[in-house]
Image (cartoon, rainbow over all chains, first blue to last red; front, side):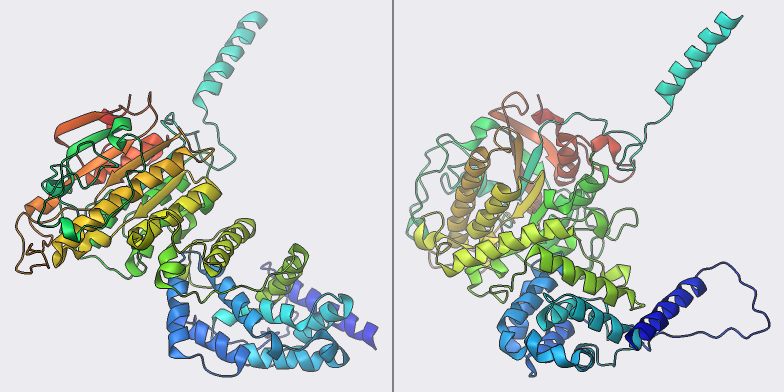
Length: 163
Length: 433
């Protein structure tokens, strides 16, 4: 079953790669259809305040207080490398939130459920099959990867910068 | 015949080797054409609106003994408002190792702080309306340096240490299509993160091993490849490489740890006199010691209380002078930068000839900045003997704010590589030997 799924995913990747090539291919009378691998429709970059307050709320499950928001915003403005300070702010939040992040042992029995919860919590959408498979594959093949590392990667990804 | 062809071919090859350009690995056509005067430049935008009357002419006594010689006493009516500082940091005034342009000018545009900063950092006067909320119109010295220096340098070699946030960050890179964020400086406003304002939202970051960082990077790459939008170039910021970002994060984290241990509360042993300017210079020194940057700009702003507190202005002028002395001492004690650094000190603008209607505790009138006297400033350039003329005072009106950018470019050897039309000023060659 697992092997079949792997073949299916690999086929999807190959098809996606081939069809992304700009070279014109014969259509053989079949209508071209745009196939979305996901339904992402986020194109608005979060403002600093939105990014900070959203990250806090997503991680701690409650709104950030206005003083903390203002102080974090000031900190954000104190560096020109925004990715760097963004990364520091997220890592500081992750340190503070360590008790609200599950341990690896808690998610091992149902990795897909964990992945769905992560995508809904941070991306506010469900993962597609490829995303589910990939996160599952990472967690199942590398025992050193835990939920906190997944949280960190998600919160510093491009998609998390948009809404 | 064969011999003739051989000679002809050799001749053509020789001419070709002289004429054909050599494309460097960095993508530049030629190596930097100018020899360097020194390998490091520190530019101190001094204090936040300083009159030559108090600085150079010593109308209230020698308020700047680290920079200028003289034992003129401080005016007796304000002495009670002047805090006690330790003796000068430097054994002899900085002028002994410098050329002083006594009658430097901020020639055009309104003498406002941001306009003055913009002029000094871009080499262009600001005569039209300026936006405080977006990158500057003209390239900054940081962009010229990172684009034209050979070999090209990362932001780790180019720092803008600012006493303030907001518009000052917009001077780290410009809107110019040929330059921009890709050539910007590491802007860092330490006083807003570290002890002066006594809070730090970035407390102690979660740390990961290099192996974990690598794995997290792999997961992030997968996530990014699944997403079809990238941040708009207009929102791009300065980017350090992953390795250099780690270095900076570790540096900042170490400072935060020291702050938590109380080790940064009085780093110069000057007690309660340590003000924001001194802290800003202290953190600039930390950057100097950690990264040996080739180009660092640091500013001070605390004398701007002069609008309603003239005595406080004089007091803070002394502190700014102390900070410059400390900065020079640190540079000379830092391996890699000692005897190989040119320090340029210049206010962004001056102050009015006459005071306003506000008087301070000692009955002195505040002074604003907006008239012709506010365009009169000084410029001090200190550096190694044999490179910078020592103890030279140029008393005639010579040099202006827009000359600082070309001067820095000349010192670092890339002035000739900046495309024509970009710079309006010229290098301050009188200071060079």
